[in-house]
Image (cartoon, rainbow, N blue to C red; front, side):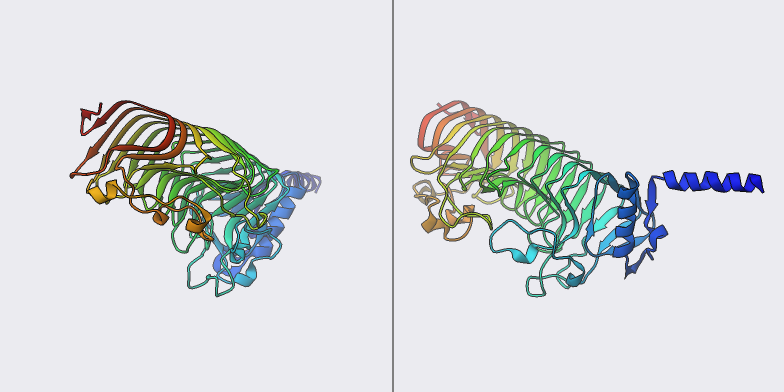
Length: 455
């Protein structure tokens, strides 16, 4: 009897110290049909109460949930072959998960996985989080489109290995968070609209690496929706991007500063709008960014930069904020293959009259374009991104159309240095390879068109 009691005591000690909290032990049916939201939340609550550990979504199971709340020291671990599946019912998504920070988009306020003021938590594993965001379930008219993930004012966050698929809106929104690592994940967000991948809003100390993105909107976004939260110290490396819109967008929502961003060793392919879309328009300062060792195929604007005025954020003042500064950009070692696209394929960099983008370097660029530009295209006047041009929308390329250069068009720039660039055209193009318009202190060296040096 004494021996039996000793064994029982040891087992109790083991379970008390256990760091794995399997959702099946908390009542989850995991049959792909039953709503297991409460069981998953109970496991999360037990985990954080006991000092942390792994909340297990077990292999071979599909666990259906509405909104859950991640907490301190919890690792949501999705085993290989497991799926955490979003409910198809909008009513299963809570109303206390903050909000989308862009104007005119309250239909994206809800979310599936939420954390607020939490620290040291993670989402890991080889399994899948499926937002189940198909249009047959979620549209604006049907009550809204929940995001998959939203984190508000959190610290020390780690996401590794998981596949994030089928969100009804953005895959993730990170608001005013610090110390973030995203490693080796896959995002596929094509079943609904506005399917952004990773949106870092006012975040600092962010590292994203070894990940792939296939998105119906921008794959990675850097934003600043609140003037007190800058976006800085961001590193993106060794990633693959394909997108219906931009590979990496910096700005648009831009009330605070952006600083110290590097993007390196990445490939971009089959992107509808831009590879790097960098836009400052809500009063902050943007500076000190480096982009290197990038390969782009079928990316019509490898670099698209605008500096203008527009209100983007839901909390932004109604009056337009002053244009502060946008300067210090290095683009180096690019290979761009756009021979399969039309004539609207070029680097496009534009400030505004008396509001210049400053100190831009483009070095070591090999670019192939289809050509086909006409003399009329070469003499075309390009609209400025004034509020008359923009209306209520963003500074998009389609508002100005075909550019008067087939390689690089730069306007309202102060300090532009272009070196070692070769631009090949498949068919004849009547436009110049490179055109400066109101560029102060602009310099070109070692520029080649179809392997012939341009004097």
